[in-house]
Length: 198
Image (cartoon, rainbow, N blue to C red; front, side, top):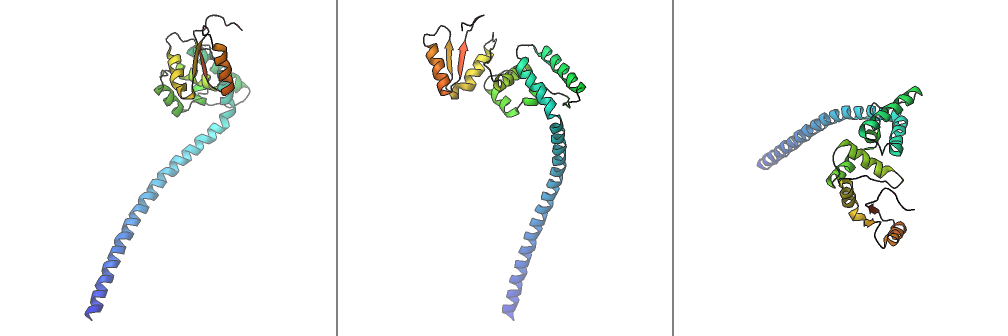
């Protein structure tokens, strides 16, 4: 009788431990469901935003690609005016665009921009737009850089890619350029004057 009593007490303790474990699991499940309820609302908002962006992607990319091709040489104000003019023209053709379509708003990647600023790029909008144009263009950019900010940024950003820095007065400039083309290395040509000798 005493052995059955001790077995019953042991069984009672096991059931109490199981009940406590179930209560902890139930509490965690309720918290998880509550958190997922908030995530559901966030996911719905994200899906609605992505659907809107998908609708506007053609017009946004047209304005951004026009900006990369043509706006590099202009001031921030003139760039904005041209982007607004292009947006109006696209609207007249019934091409949908986002409210702030442009080079920066369409093509900016926050992680890259943060890396650029760590590497010395100024944080103003024009510098960031110029960096986007520089990285997205397929031609060789010419940077008018009186304060040497872009020069420092390029050197810092490309130092891991074996950047070659040359001047027109260097004796081995041709060999450096040939090797850079052959091996796919970046080259920074400094102190270019008004004209380049072909």
